[in-house]
Length: 354
Image (tube, rainbow, N blue to C red; front, side):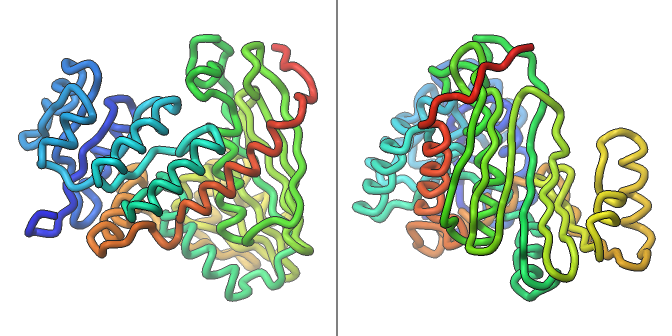
């Protein structure tokens, strides 16, 4: 580790999420991008060109061996996460892997086993767990802000035109709505409620065979959670948690929540935080600014796109010599993947038709 205790990150990959990581790291304390690697050396040089102190490499092994980094952020396509994570572990290099850690349960178990055998830090980049609004909402729920929780509902869906070569629909690239979108509500439901007693669900297939859309129902004791995801529609992209004494709402967009609302009724919650058209956006702004009876808005706005919070958490864990980040352990990743696997192991409920 370098003397300044700033964690020097090497970025594997040069796509949109890698660039987002490099942009957001400026808002994280004690962390900096020091290097980037790509199989296409020209892409690595292009990625590094805006930065005076970022080195470019033509392979992950070359970047790890450069001694210029303290940790690796893997932002490559899903199908190479497993191999590259094991390479980092074998080299003794702490690593944060863009979600999903892997799309296969057996690969995730192998990564967890290797990480624990060696004591090397490994974390899935489930960035939403680290947003200030999400953490504050978790605390508020535990403190009884809406009384006893009775129900959780979540939807995350974006319309994408089907293309067999698009990574979202390509089985060889780890495509499918559950791995790309559904892991968010599953992970956050577990973050808020613990482990489910029961899981059931169904999915509809895209022409390529991956899940175009999926729905899940989970039971957490007396609490029922229902969630859905898909590439076949524009969803509400909200998470709604109902209790004896009120309703807590995250979003839209709940995976990038910059605050949460607490309402005395579901009707008020729908009025204040629903709709993605202009009228809905105007209502949300008004309800956030004007403290009407039966409503409360808790603001946690931030600069950048929000990756800085997971970067800071991972950097602090690495600096403190931890092998896992306490709020996002590999057991969490495996548990979420088991739920996704359980749903996808059943035959599709039908084929998607445009």
